[in-house]
Length: 533
Image (cartoon, rainbow, N blue to C red):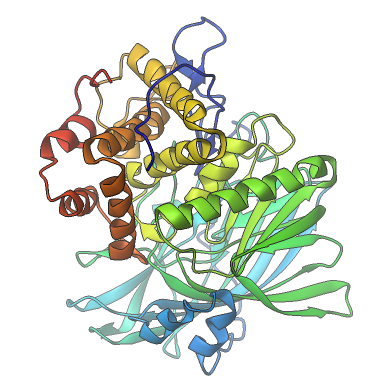
């Protein structure tokens, strides 16, 4: 049985995720905390140029596999493939894209076409469909254009909304529950660098690595009959996505390594010096890839291939990075639930935050530095928290960020002993308690936390660090046996779904057969003085 964690002081290893920089002690005044960079703000000279113009011609529609369940099976471990036989109507993406990258000028181009098969699952009919063009968001160092689209065989020109971030299509006919929209849309993305500088970016080029998450038109969530179409606030993650199925074909430079979400199922060298690689994902929330001059290695663990991709100058860290990823994957499987996919890629994207999570792929921005351990285990934990158990990353980000932060503490406890873990928590507590924001609740939205205080990254301070302290307080209230039983029950209830703060509370109360409203009011909903341990 695990003992409850006591608190002793230790220096915290800074982690950024999704991609927010966690607070660190200020070096200017010796007091308070400050982020190591201003989260998400881009240099003044870079201005995204979302364009309302459309591509001149429609590309051929990608074909879908005749039996998508069979085609997707390589992405899932034996024993987990039956989830494909119970598809509740997940959106299907078939994407073909061509990638060019000029590392010398830090410029890249992605051009392609996406076939999106959307099944309407809500009770109320809809007359329109929205696609998000996330490369036009200020947090991405890129610009994107897309459209017009073919929808059920008819060409539709969309309305451009949110300055190019969203496209709204009026459907030829209304969709009722069970109806499908078969949409094909061409797209083009132009990306640049440096995303690994003093103000890092989510999408772009860093030291010859092109990192490209959500590079295609993405269907947002439909909530109470309305598409979740909104700008993401600075400081946190950008997207909320329902589970979908992906088949992606990428054609790009043969001389560069390629890491991507999902499992590789085909590879073909072309006469023009490019290579076409095909991937399937199983049920995931989105898709990302990285091209770069990588060296790579892999390890096997219980049917999962864990691949590490690093630059040549960072190859001394490769085996340690793989050990950390494998160790956290094993621990999360024990503590939360099984990892269903056949592959997990851990990719070196220098300086692009501490790390960012995507399905079966995480980027790490700290390879080659002394701060490798926490970013790797934190990002791997996100494969469970947000990846498998979805949550609203804009309005209730604590559900994945506090969970992943506490999962990092659990790794330290398991790998290095209780003293190392208690030291981490002690540092969180001392920094939070010394701030003027210590009584804020952890359950607020990204944009709800104060901005403009140069001493503090308040969002990271409260959501990551105070949020991890809440997890430990919950563990102490429940006791170890009940706490870890709760994590497993929570995972089982919301795997491939979405959970809210209230869902999390109900699951915890069901596990203990007790009332936890006072604890949740103090830490999550209302806030107040942190109890002295």
